[in-house]
Length: 427
Ligand SMILES: Cc1cc2nc3c(=O)[nH]c(=O)nc-3n(C[C@H](O)[C@H](O)[C@H](O)COP(=O)(O)OP(=O)(O)OC[C@H]3O[C@@H](n4cnc5c(N)ncnc54)[C@H](O)[C@@H]3O)c2cc1C
Image (cartoon, rainbow, N blue to C red; front, side, top):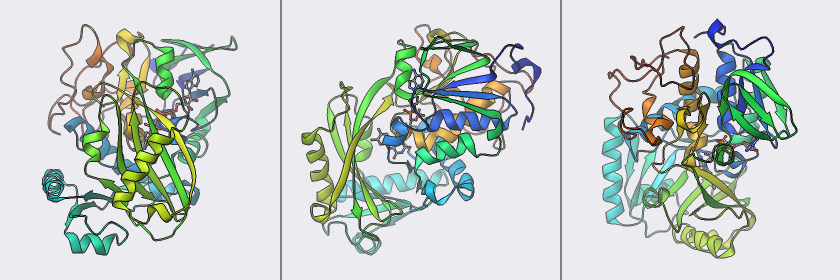
């Protein structure tokens, strides 16, 4: 790892830092910690506080998803980074390796579970198919009518806002991270961030990592808000043991229009149940909508019949930053903002994929090799003139030669797409 910033990433003498990051959510925090670990001085600006956006609203389920090869590669890499990080986290970060249990409501969904099991097994992801009896033994609170399920052992949960704070203030290189909270960014360019209070911060690199707020800074970005509702109950320790998801979640998660709900329940380490989730487009109103909440809870009660007897103590909403292909924007902003770097558009998987996002972006900035191909996440896939950076859903195998972006020691600028090179597993 490159511990010292190479001269090419050092900004001018008047610069505030080597890197300025807009956004102190889990993505911005992970990028800051990673770049600081590479020896760079990082300044993070947030209009509110640490982890106050989607990071505070989300569920914090760390899950390998397999909707596309690119989603699988990023979520698997990142979930494994979380498992490595976990021993350093504190009890308040609420990390728990509870596993995911995908619940099949009928035989058709059980077939889908079998197919998912087989597909994941070929990629080395451990899982167990559960028949009716073993599902009942694993999760007695589930409705007796459920047909079975698929348990993915190493998935986990975490409380992302405190992890964002740990990454920024306590992680090994945190001394190289400066924080400017309560400062709103008005504009960005390749080497400068302008604040609404008239101040400006200069740096060799500017990273836009402000979630749904990225649309306000760079209106051409292909990011739409996807509203979600969650509800948390009182404490019922042991009622459920795994993060439970209906298999239909896979169908509804990437709906591009309308309102959809899916059963999703998480056992918090406190004994509380976190219940989700809904997905809505075409709204930026943060209000809890009773009809949507009712629809979501009715769905959950089909899976957990005891749910209507539990006390719900708070419901809230948040906005996922969704891209048209469901993959984040990680890399040079190019036509969207020449010279600027992007780490945004993580939709409903940004807690899971934050650590890998930071690794991939840092590799491109400092010129090291990334562990997985970086091009499926390049914003360039949405450029008007695009067409030469590969299919967003095409992650080539680990021996392919399009993984890392830059020649070590020759850091990229965000205005140019990186030179393809071999990637390695041990970046
Ligand atoms: C209901 C719901 C459930 C979810 N469940 C999960 C889950 O189980 N697992 C999972 O992996 N993901 C989940 N997600 C997604 C996940 O929460 C997000 O993808 C992730 O938190 C995005 O992090 P971020 O840092 O990109 O953005 P944010 O957390 O939104 O952070 C952006 C930050 O930028 C700041 N900001 C914005 N504009 C400006 C500006 N102009 N100037 C300065 N600062 C600015 C904001 O104040 C904010 O702090 C869920 C999301 C929702 C809404």
